[in-house]
Amino acid sequence: PDPRAAFISCGAIAATMAAYIPPHRRAAAQRQSTAQSTAPGKNTAQGPNTASSSSNNAYSDFFDECYCINLARRSDRLRKYEASARRTGLRWTRFEAVDGAAVGNGDDFDPLWDATRNAEWDRHVAPGLRRATAGERGCALSHVALWRKAVETEGWLLITEDDCRFDKRWTPGSPAYLWRTHVPKDAELVYLGFSDRGEREYVAGSEEVFRPTYGFCTHCYAIRGAAARKFLDALPVAGPVDVWLADNNWFGAQVYCVIQPGGGWQNTGRWLANQETKPGEADVRQSSRDAVVADEPVDALAGATRALRVDGVDAAAATV
Image (cartoon, rainbow, N blue to C red):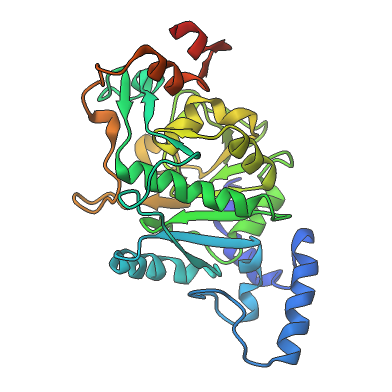
């Protein structure tokens, strides 16, 4: 029989095992049950709640929290996200995105970043120093704010962006099924949507889970407190947050990607969450395609590369 059949039919498994509650969610489920019994009909979710009340959606509570990053002015994108998320059974909360045009860098963001390693994986990018755009600043600061929530979470936090579109195979049972059968126990960050580059280091015996070498996108990933702490300890984010993470090999976090075998680009597998990339839709303009910043002093360049380590070499030390 096709070994992928079980992965594809995870919705059917969810229907037959709807009563299962992941161990890290049992205490919360008991508290929620008690609250519901004392306050009938009360909706305890913050923001939009797309989960059905059907018992078949018990798995939709696998994640401790699910957030959708969304700018206040982009209600159009939120409506599209809600339509896509409805069939997943996810209980999600809108998270007010940081508007990068309205805030400064603060202590959590450095606009100067080195595109040298990025250029190795993107033929459209030239190596050299760049200055991040306002959209990249807002995106990075939004994710930083959610990492701070993640360190207070015992289980998994699902972070999504409003241009995330869930694959039709994502059913209410998908997360619990994946974590029970595919995701390694040491995982600290799991991409459910990504644009990976380089070799894939597949988990032994698996066609679904691999360690990425490099990649882009932050539209859908699950994170635990351990990874969030590592990222927060490495602040400030320098430039685009997805590139910053990949440039620095995720600061030692245990990172995996989950795909559906077969299909996708050149039959490399389908993601459970894709990113809508229609022209003119993006809120974040990419600075990687901008001209190299040539008028910055040497100490600024060192600052932009101070956390970058390539092949075990401190890039800041190699720069000056």
